[in-house]
Amino acid sequence: MRLLLLEDDGVLAGSVVEAMRCAGYAIDWVRDRCEAELSLCDETYDLLVLDLGLPGDAGLDLLNQYRTRGGRVPVIILTARDAVQSRIRALDVGVDDYLIKPFDLEELAARVRVLMRHRTSLAAQVCAHDGLLLNLVSHEASLHGVALDLVPREFSLLRALIEEPHRVFTHRELLGKMYGPDDAIDSNALEVHVHRLRQKIGAERIVTVRGIGYRLRKLT
Image (cartoon, rainbow, N blue to C red; front, side, top):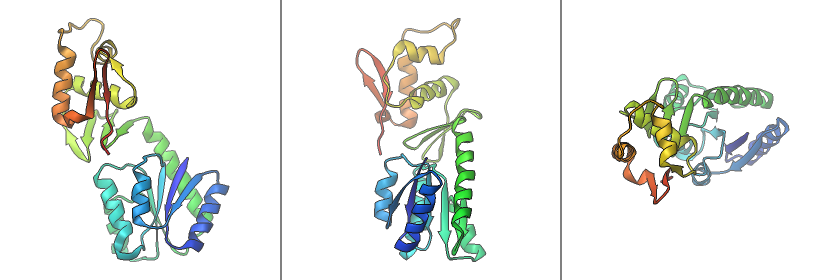
């Protein structure tokens, strides 16, 4: 598991980094919003530990922007603001948990473990890629938080592509994901579904690999 810490206090950051590494986590530390934004673009983190007390509400603004564009990584905030309204505001933006400074490092490690267990449980039910989110239980889909109206075969097509976003799928493989063995399949069925899905998620997100099939493209 890999964590990202955004904290401008070097002493506190050093303590958190040491505690998380002792708990078995890999952790990267950044000092400001710009560094955090660049790091989050990699989409390789399992949890963000965020100082809410950065100058100019930068921490809360970063979180709001991250959630708006579809970021799903759990977030724990570290804050000296113990007012109820401050905590409510943070929860409304998309915080998963918070600790009020000063806090115990063992408690932080425990809260990280809880969120990691929850994330592992949800991972089997949700597929996410570049702002796209599929709930495999409810069969709901969204793009940057906006619901997508997908018919079942469009959902199955997108699910196949999103589960292995760097792989090129052949026509036969994708049809096998969308249709049963006894279904009648029109000769241009896949092209029709790809065209309709492109209209809903953006044509540039699905790449045609001539002579082979299709794959997803990451835009951000």
